[in-house]
Length: 313
Image (cartoon, rainbow, N blue to C red; front, side, top):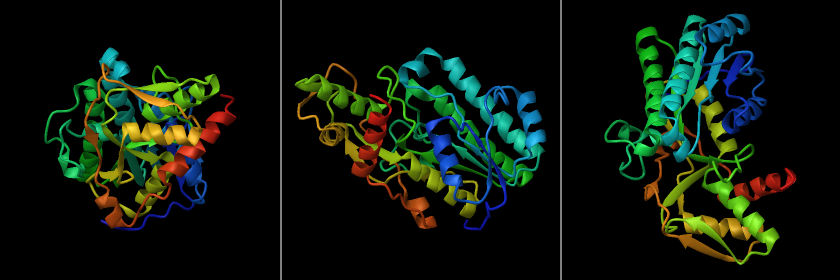
């Protein structure tokens, strides 16, 4: 349901401002003539209910964006299921309830595309939520994120709170994690291609067959969508935020190698798993509201590579 909510003059709290998503939201809000509030873990440990309530009582935000989460790859999810479920449940429950207690006018909860069933029809529409089993390797994180969506819906129904949810696709951009042990596919490919180029290597190796297709969105596009939804959207259904297109992993590796300037071969290690064959979200809902992503994949990867080199790699 379109409406208008003015961010100008508001105190906007971005939970998780140090992460890739939160820092992008902070950058985007600089254009909105609002006061951006942030808190370190020492100032407000979001897992500690009393600390969160005390911070809200002191800082009195008008708007909240929940970009804070305990995140990690497949191995981390599989190794620490209790932490992923408990900590993410606590973060969202503490912040959403404190927001209600202190009269926050608008709240945006950010989830993840892993909330959807493992074998959802493609492209994945918002209504696919809870229609089938989750991907087992990250179900702990997914269950917590689904609970956050449902909390926003419940608070809207019971208390009339203007709380909304958005589900981003695979993200990349400034502030990404380039640690090969824990990074996602895009930063891992950039680092592998760059290091192979410096070493004069003849090839790089990617996991699996290279055929799975993945969708990527620049984090600055997500941040722009967050500002757009805060200002224009007010309904209990969550909204997908993606680029609307996907690319086979092998083609992505080829694109990254071209941008980095690595001329070698791409070897597929087929002893490694492929994961889900395809995960593309439908962006028709947010497009219908009037928002489109602006940063094309080639341009976005090029900008991230320049940043990566500036960091001294």
